[in-house]
Image (tube, rainbow, N blue to C red):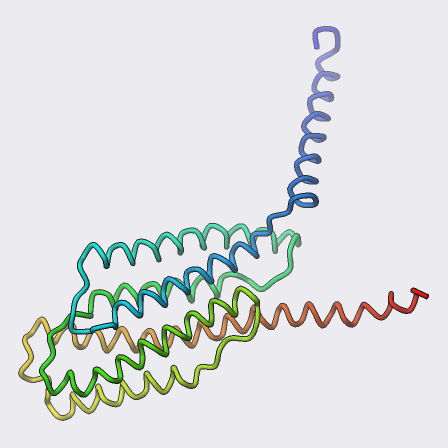
Length: 251
């Protein structure tokens, strides 16, 4: 370096950086690619599984509040999964913008799961209210049905997202929520909540609100999982259309 001019030294340095960058590009994107879209799908599916487990735990016995440590652990696991999902989603969008990968925008998926996380937080705070015997008898069967159908739907949605297949049907989930909403409204109209303590009444109505929000956001999950499935189907169909052009050239 001491025997060349400053300009030649600068040119040598630029060439070194260029060669190093090219080698890194080849290794990262051609030899050992780790596509952020695939990692995002896996992270989103894992979060759906965690949300299904949380829904099952919180509605297992809606009059029994979980220990604070258990509730915090459940919420922290989902929050950590959401943090990982946001990080990989940003990388996936960057790959998509520079056309390293093809796939749908991750924004709708991230927003749907963020809203789902908020629903689980509200649900965890609302459960555990002491209900009058008549109210509990009317609502407990409907809540257990929501627990079962919602848990199964979320787990099936996670599996469908991993395989980029169409989402599971929403019919049973919608019926379960509709039955609870009807019973909830009937309990209010009949005045069965008038004798409840103020704290129990607040949790009771918060539970109803949380479940209404959860119903809407499960519809959103159904939609975005379907979008990822259609994207894969479109790519597969485009590949089938192009393949006969080459197949004819093979004897």
